[in-house]
Image (cartoon, rainbow, N blue to C red; front, side, top):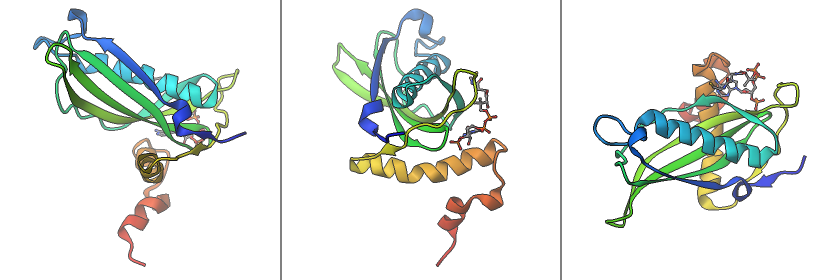
Length: 171
Ligand SMILES: CC(C)(COP(=O)(O)OP(=O)(O)OC[C@H]1O[C@@H](n2cnc3c(N)ncnc32)[C@H](O)[C@@H]1OP(=O)(O)O)[C@@H](O)C(=O)NCCC(=O)NCCS
């Protein structure tokens, strides 16, 4: 299976915040944004491995700035690292006030998706080739983030988390 560049999975998604998308403060509801982020991650992961994919984990989400009704939501998603059957997808979100022409950061997050075969079983995905400085940084940090989420998800024992241990062990 041939490795693919990060840029090959890169996608952008734009949405307009309408009244049905908001909370009682007139800002975009967190749940609606998470829904759009999940869709963006799903498209980026399917673009990387050319098969249907399923969300298996979502990392911590902190909302830095609210996105106001009438503003545009910009979502960027790309695969930051591929493992065996799973992929980490990095998502970045901005809001934009088209009238004031002001763009502001909303949040970023890591989603993990698993590629599935026709019987619904996890299948192997192509490896990823990071090219830019930012892509390499994301790629290198992905092993540590994977171990944290596997421990939290009850899929790995803390004693087996060698990448995390290395952070705290002096040579
Ligand atoms: C996704 C699913 C098919 C995987 O099945 P599984 O029996 O857990 O398979 P595995 O244990 O072999 O895990 C498959 C991959 O997911 C990864 N994974 C499993 N749990 C994980 C977690 N909590 N965080 C990150 N990765 C995880 C594994 O590390 C493995 O990746 P790898 O092959 O790259 O090493 C199954 O967990 C499932 O159906 N989950 C529900 C998904 C869903 O409904 N999503 C929509 C949300 S409503």
